[in-house]
Amino acid sequence: MSSEKAMSKRQAMRVKRERQARVQQLSVLGVVVVGALLVAFALIYPNLKPIGKVAAASSRERPMVNDNAMGDPNAPIKVEEFSDFQCPYCQRFYLETENQIVEEYVRTGKVYFVYRSMGNFLSDNIARSGGSRNTESNDAISAAYCAGDQGKFWEYHDILFANHTGEGVGDYAARKLTAYAEEINLDMNAFQSCFNSGKYEERAKQDGVDGAAAGVTGTPAFYLTYTVNGETKHKLIAGAYPFSEFKTQFDAALTEMGIQ
Image 1 (spheres, helix red, strand yellow):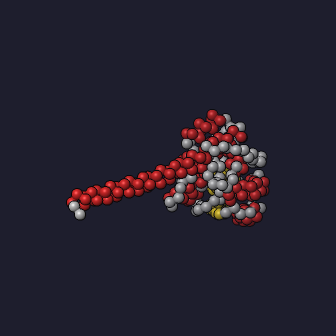
Image 2 (tube, one colour):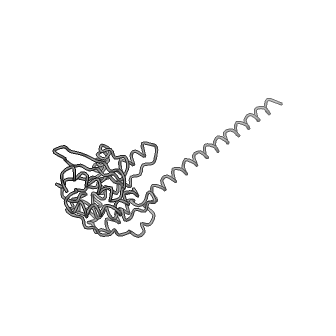
Image 3 (cartoon, one colour):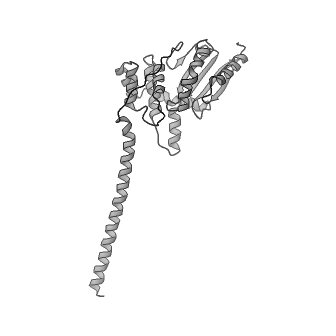
């Protein structure tokens, strides 16, 4: 084989390898672009798809409401519910148990009840474990605290759970949070200003910090605080138990305090 033919063959092989490398690079780039587009679509779509019908929440009368709390602040037992609006078990507690506690213990002055959120804390833990961070729980509690500025924390709390579908992300996309605010007749300028400013982001984070300090690792969880002979005691009820379990725990604490 002449040197010219050998050179031509080497050049052809080099051109072929370069062409294959470019095709491979373009294929990789294509996969990356498609992946990025899919991620972007997953993040954007909840705010683009039609909102659909907003489910109205059943009306509940709560005693001595003050922002995210209800009942007598001097009640012998303080209960802090650490919850997450995206949690189906938290929704179950709201639907099946909360009202019984309100009627038997909050309205009678035995329990002071406070709602707090673990959504931001749990979402951060998922992200640290390599999962994708979902901000909707944090957005939902921030919006609820904004509603509280207008004296409607619990009305917003109720409509959030009424529209929890269990389908994952989307229930608390920003446009839906606005629709829920409209449904309960909030001053929309004040609500949007509060929500868009991130006014309650730090408060939501502090909920998670305090819940973790109380030993909360999942939702819902209920942190009881009461005093016996000058000693402050705590109990943690972890889970969406039926009313009978709460009754047992509350009555036991009241008996310790000498209250019938």
